[in-house]
Image 1 (cartoon, rainbow, N blue to C red):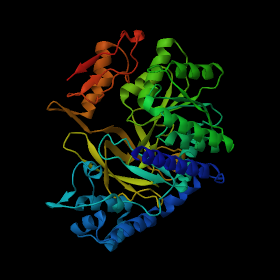
Image 2 (spheres, rainbow, N blue to C red):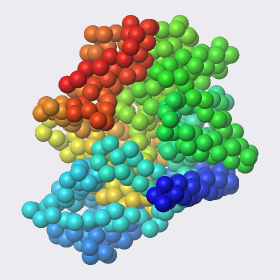
Image 3 (cartoon, rainbow, N blue to C red):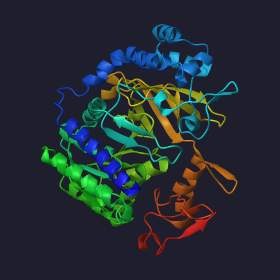
Image 4 (tube, rainbow, N blue to C red):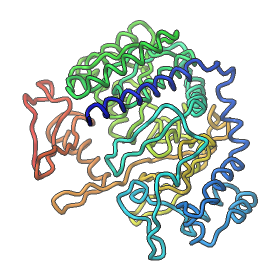
Length: 476
């Protein structure tokens, strides 16, 4: 029966995940977690060429067809990397037409070059050396859902980034608080294991999504994974669900750690982190000195300003569904939205877009155990990529490029009107709070199923403290 098949698939999915996480947790601790990063920096060109050669040996592979149309062979690529360096070689490939647009990669548009459509499948970009037990899926909100299997090797590698961040910001010994969803997103479970292995365990895990009736099995599976980790000796807390639209418990927790003389580390996506800071300000809670480590969406100036007004120190990270970890900020990056590019794992080249001041980013995977082989795939973000001049833990391992002014330039269209994402961001984070009260993060766009039109809802933080007593909506 379909229901039984679905239940069996879910059981197998989470069984594989449990085995993968247990295998990672029980892996021997690395004396120097950053050693894998330094080794990869030394070998990245050779390892990239191995990945490219695997794709180009297959006549029907997407990259083979793109290379053929560009008149480029593997020998040409190898010669270009050797003579001119990796980034220059990738830039030349992009100029020759070897790239994949974001809409093409996500299945929203066909790949067309020189008037010819190039058929391709997910197997074209699968890395045979990157298979693992823990699956990760994107939301599918911008196209087809991306599903990857992540190996223990990539977990150990990414542990090195967290090790560098802990050293760079002096975080060892400080309490750690996490505000995330539970499964099906597996990254919170993986990070709790990583931080514990590095001696910086999570003290409190506040979970989003309370009251979602369809999520009971995700909660049960999450609790099972936590119980497994604790049974294996891990210091991993059970998630505590937050009341709907109420971040007071998190703000109070951070204030208590501050009162005890131990300002915490908060790990959250940018919007919840902003609302936590706003709640602390509204409630008169002192969270000064708390370190906000934010990701999941670009850190806007409005969000940063509000968090800093609560006394927080704010440092972004850069991740994407396509590439995973892309960058970490060092202690010198205290303004704007800036990170060191993880140049051991990926490389970025840019092209100006038609809109002034915007640069399209095209990324290439370099890790031998990355889940996918990606060569010049558009990230759907705009940013400036330039030399990093600071002296920090990240620059010392060779991350001498920084990515700043990151934002998504995806478009939202409704009722025949197209808005750039940057315009919507200003509307949600500046204009609406100024008009109706509230703070950045209080306004969201939501598309409700069953409606003939998109309904714009002011969903989060609705309550008497904002001057609202019911959820208002505006149909457009």
